[in-house]
Length: 374
Image (cartoon, rainbow, N blue to C red; front, side):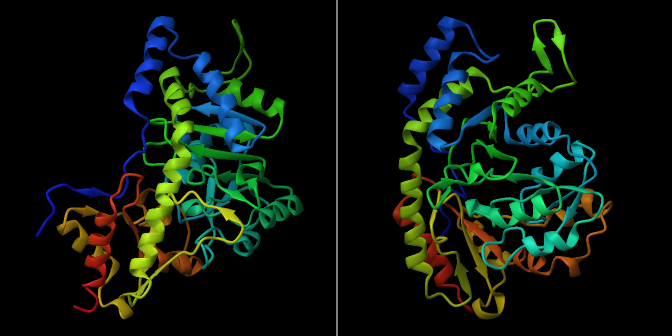
């Protein structure tokens, strides 16, 4: 029997409406809607403090942040990145007239493989763009060593890694720059939104200049910038979210642990354990479905859940290299990306969000458990 109310793969965590309404009244009274207003300034400071970083610059969304980060570091030529990510990672390169070069992923947490990256470096390579997939940190120190050895820039796409720490240190404190997304699907959201994290004041000043048309004063434009500023309504919402995000993460952890308990002994189903030394944000709950052991393919399970009004997602499917816009212009060969090609056909992200009920998680798990080899 189909469910009447759907269960989506995610829903945004949100503060109480009355808290937001109080801040909206202040915005209406001030009539300051954008352009580095008081909420923007306060949010930038409080967010940096919360994340444990020195400098952060707010953006209207994460894609604009990544596009601007590449401009900030004056990246050209070729950048080595992962095929296993949301397509915006590569789109930002293409919008900067940079050629993406794809390397395979590791088998443990599906992050970009440093050894494959080093093997792909050519005289045209100028930077490395790894992604902390599902919020699990990639091998940052190894990437930093590779970047230093080959004189490359290093930008981390941390869109999925809000608040993640390794050995008590934020993952955002590595590389030249890190990029965050505050999209509605993320653990921490400001409707839309994003940020660039950097490590010195001079770099922040350049980022702030580029996201505001290149203006260095009322009548002075230093270089062609873009309009990528976060507005006051987003910033006010973000300030409230900081009060609640720890609770959201705790609720996600509880759901993750329930999934693990319910699915631990299902043949053909596997999932991540927490990474040692890492404070997770539990942004996703991906499972892998081995069709031989389980008796159904990933897509059959995806459609089974959909028949019951449960909308899981195949993150990340297809690979970026398989999209027509890249497949036709790049030379990536499936034999060069064997593990990414395998995982994209097996992965299924199950619903996870703060208000997902325990009985809904159990229902999802029962559907998966009861359909083994049926």
